Length: 451
Image (cartoon, rainbow, N blue to C red; front, top):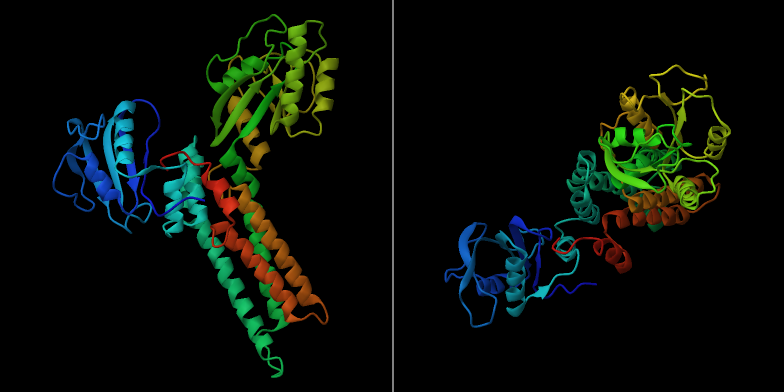
């Protein structure tokens, strides 16, 4: 997938101008490449930040310095990648950083591909696959809860859980294989009832982890929340109240919103994409009709629909139509304009006043509760990655089959062993003990260059 025999280089900080920018070099020739960059004779000291200058990259013979930098050498294996790594912190000008990269390439390095530094860390045993994926998630985190979940996995919490499962399975496998090795001795190293009990306990523990996977996925990936309702029920006002500023136009004229208006917000730790839609009604106006149609399509694919009703007016046929069309969707029904006398007594999820802000916090909690089943989110989930969850479900299925084989009247230990080995293979694939090259490529190509 990646060559690991050469030295790679890349800018490790985000594109654009900044106070600092970092160029990372990793590989067996990292120090030789760095020597071509740095305007100093003495070699770098291990793990010491060294103030120096870098040479101009205009031509091979031009040795004029062009920036003051801090260079740090991390000798193998005590580095992020497990190889020799030199990191050069320069001023965050794209021209300066690109010049550093070009000089490093002239000195024999190769431009790193996305995720290549972390891939080398994985190959060199610095990180397992769960931790490598957590690096990507930590970089992409946009809420404190996302960052906490990613950091917990980077610290090895999920890895430790998987390893504990595998130790238990390995013991069962060893005892069953020992029984197969001595078929004529009449001696079994484990009782079938004990196998059944231990496998059942493992299934129960997996169920506990998997029951939290939907919440973890929601924390990691965020959710799309569509606000729907007929014209002038206060959808845009409610949208603005949840966003925290006047993002959508609010007017008394029906049909003001004619297209989807979106905004990213945080709601009790969840990263939400709020979508304001055109008011649901029959119309002959071409632009408004298209807006209504787009709103219908948006709510059909949303993670949650917030259905807004006007408590200060009698329910209309459009209200009833919307309630019927969203009956099978995950939804929160909101009675808006709670500051005015109610004209109907239908049950709703929450009553709010988008005008004065009453009930907005209750609505946020109702959204979180509907998406995750909890209110509010305080603890990080053990599992948040779809790949991990699917592999654990596969492991559970294999354990169920093993338990069924144990219960069969004349089933050989070989049948149980086959399912236990399959379960262990699933666990191993989670942490990358044995994972196909296609899966690895898919995972690491999602990284940014420089990480």
